[in-house]
Amino acid sequence: MQTSQGESAIATGAGSQSAAHEQLQALYVALLMRQERFDEFKQLLALYPKPGASDDAESDQAAAIRRKLNERISAWIGSAFTGLAAHQVLVWRAVLIEEQWGLSLSSTLDRSS
Amino acid sequence: MHNGGSTSDGNMPLLYEAFVETLPPALRGVARELPWHLKLVADRSAGWSEVFPHQLSLGAPQLFAEALPGAPLARVREATLAHLLCVLEAAVLERCCVDRAQLDSEVSAVLEALAGARASALARLGPAAERAHAMARAETLAALEEERQILPEARPVTFEDYRRITRAKASVSCTATLLLAQLAETGQRESRIIHRALGNAWHAIQFERDVLCWERDWRTGSAWVVPLVRGIRSRRRNGERATEPDLVRRAVLGSGVLEMLLGMAVSEYRKTRRRACALGAERIWAWAASREAHLSELLTCESESAGYVIRLQKLAPWAREVFR
Image 1 (cartoon, rainbow over the protein chains, first blue to last red):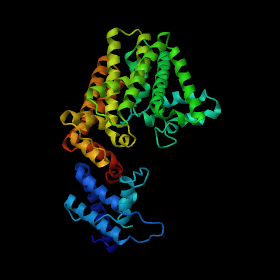
Image 2 (spheres, one colour; image 1 turned 120 degrees about the vertical axis):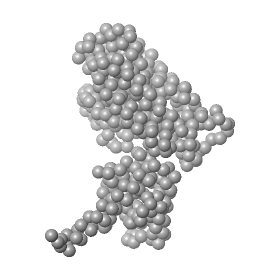
Image 3 (tube, helix red, strand yellow; image 1 turned 60 degrees about the horizontal axis):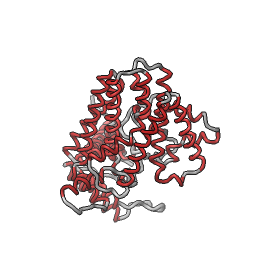
Image 4 (tube, chains in turn blue, red; image 1 turned 180 degrees about the vertical axis):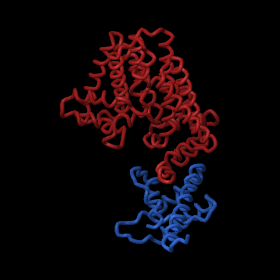
């Protein structure tokens, strides 16, 4: 039986989400197992600037740090990492640098926002 | 005091709530939020079980009662209440030795009431109770004083001193259980095993806690790990003294002290388990066995990669999201 275009799109979307989820799992393990990676990850997160109240877009400086972070993650997990989005970097910055434990991290898994 | 790990806290909140209900209504709110007022927790609504996550810490007599068939239920309850209040009072002492002057009058009134309730609860355990508690309290206070000489400046310390001070700090946590054992006419051998099992358990809980919370403790000038590292280093070579946070962290991870402390905690949990088995104290046996197994796994990982246990905690929110 042939699938419709809509079903294919959903399947592809679900597939890429699942791949992204697996990459985040791989990143978790990479950070857990090696202190120097954990330290570097935290260092780059700490450098990532928090946006001001009126900032809508990510600054060039922030984008450059995020690019560097994503390159390092790709090197650690050994596969083409699709990259942490700006909002994900901010959430992880809040959790690991500012130690805001009560944050919901669900958005870090939502790659489309 | 004891912290770290996880078990349920049984009926301890009910016993504490019963104490709160004896207070004038104006003090009850402060009493319910006492851990927060004493800066022992960040969340205002957090109860004592957040400070003492192990059931044994606040409920030792109740758990050891399984091994004391001669102990009437009413006595077990009285001993458990006395124990709870002794431990809370010790936590207060530990916290307030530093900044008692900063406590407001309502908190001070609650602490006074707590001390009074503790004295009454102990008195119900017999004429020997107050004297036994006074001796234990003196040991605890002396240990706290010694701790205050070491921790703020992170003076080098040996593992032997660390063990001794940790054990002495927990002295008040043994009194009520041992009194209950006496009241239940337990034999000398069993009493000795109970005493040793308590010592092993307090050591294990404290060693575990001192590993898991070392970075937070370091920020507040109360980490044991750093004086231990300095003790190790001063035996190896003189003079080196890291103070920058990154250097301290590197020194701690490079020293293997976290692995050593975890190994000590595993060993103490194992002794607790064996002694609980000899006594027939099933719940303590199950708790100690579970902690021993959990920490043994952590120890293996920590041995393979220094700092693993700390990263595991820091990445816990991530793990909850990506592995659910």
